[in-house]
Image 1: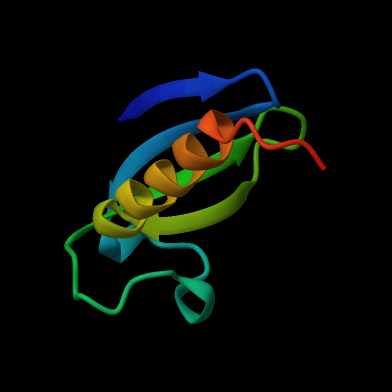
Image 2: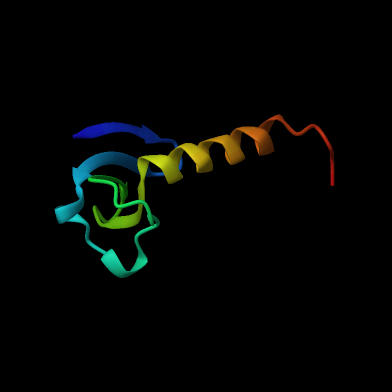
Length: 72
């Protein structure tokens, strides 16, 4: 199931864990049954896989970074 895209050239889809492409690199130590895949618009290949819990953590980190108004 496709669940949206990003301007950076990726879209996301949710798949059963059995459909993971890169099990050895999967970011999930919770035994989650579903995995979110980020797929390149250019190659159509799965570039990144993580579970919902890790996706939520990543989302929070990205939102915090975006909200940080400190300059370099």
